[in-house]
Amino acid sequence: MDKERISDFANTVYRDMAGAMAIGMGYLGLKTGLFEALKEFASVGVDELSERTGLAPRYVEEWLKGMTAAGWLEHDEAKDTYSMPAEHGFLLASDGTDHYMGGLFLAGPSLLSQAPAVARSFRDGGGVSFDAFDDDWLAALDAMNDGAYRHRLASYWMKHLPDIEERLSQGGRALDVGCGVGKVCLALAQSYPKARITGFDPDPASVLQARDAVAKADTQQVDIVQGIITDIPSEPGYDFVCMFDCLHDLAEPEKTLVEVRKRLTPGAALMVMEPRAADRLADNANPLGTVYYGFSLFHCMTQSLAQGGPGLGACMGPTRTMSLLHDAGFAEVSQLAIKSMTNMFFSARA
Image (cartoon, rainbow, N blue to C red; front, side, top):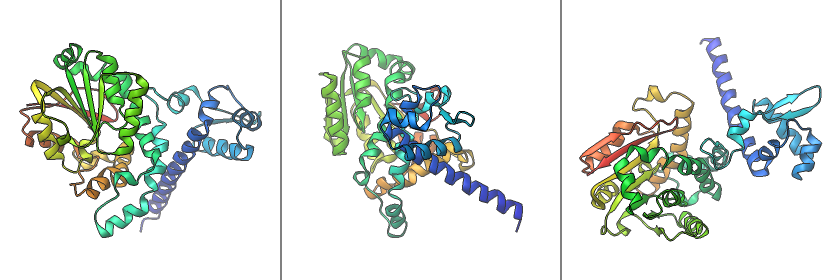
C-alpha cells in the first residue's frame, strides 16, 4: 500500500472529525450566547467574558481555546485575549439575516443524535420518523431558512414570476406546502398585504409553532392547517403554490404534485426550491454535497422511508426534480435563474 496515501487519508479523517467537533463547539457558542457576547468586544479575556455572560470560567476558557484551534476565533498571545473577526461574526452572530449560519450548529448535534436509529434502519429497513427529532431540529430548520424567506422571497425570488407577484399584490391566494413553523406564510403576508395565505404541514409541533407565530404577528391573512395536501379544498384554487425544501422529503411526492396541480387557478404557478445538488455524483464531491448527503441520511431520506415513501433524498438533482414535475402533468417546467449557493429553484405551470 501507498504509505503517503494512508497518511493523507488519516489527515482527512482528523480534519473531518475536527469539523464535527467545531460544529459541536458552535452549538455551545450559540446556546450559551457566547457568539453574541463576543460581538461586544474588540478583544476579551476569559474572566471578563465569563463575568459578562454569567458562565463558568473554566468552560469559557476551553471553548475559547477550541474555537481558536478551529480557526473561528483569534488569540492575542501577548495579552491573552480572544476576538471574533467581524467577517466571522457576520456569519456566526447575525440571527435573522439571510447570511446567518447558526442553524447548522443546531442541525449537526440534532441529526447525529439519531445515528443509532438510522444504523438500525440499514439492517431493519424503514426509517426514523420526523417526530423522533428533538426541538433543536425545528429550531435549526427555522434558523437556516428564516432570514432567506424574510429578505429574499419577495424582494428577489418572486421577481422571477412577475405575473404571479401581480396577482398576489391584487389579492390573490397562495399555498405553502410543508409550511413548517410558518415563516414563508408570514413573509408572503407581509409583502402582499391583500393576499390570502394558507400553509399546511403534517407535523403537529411545527403547526403549533406556526400558529403561535401567526398569532404574534397579529395578521388575519394567514391560515395554518395540520394535514396533507388532500386536506386542502381544491376550490377556490390558488394563484401561487410553493414547496420549499420539502419535495424530496415527501412520502408521496408524485401524488402530492398531482394534487397541487389540481388546486392551481388558470395561469397559476408552483415554485419549488430544492438543495443545490448536481445530477452527477462527481459534481457533488465537495463540502456542500457532503453536508447534503449527511442531511439526507440522517433526516430527509430516512423520514420519508419511515412513512413508506420513496426516500428521494436531498441530492436528487435538477433532472429528477423536473421529471417529477413533468410526470405530475405540469406542461411548463423550467429551472429559474435565481442565484443561490445552497438552493436551486423551479417553476411549474399547468
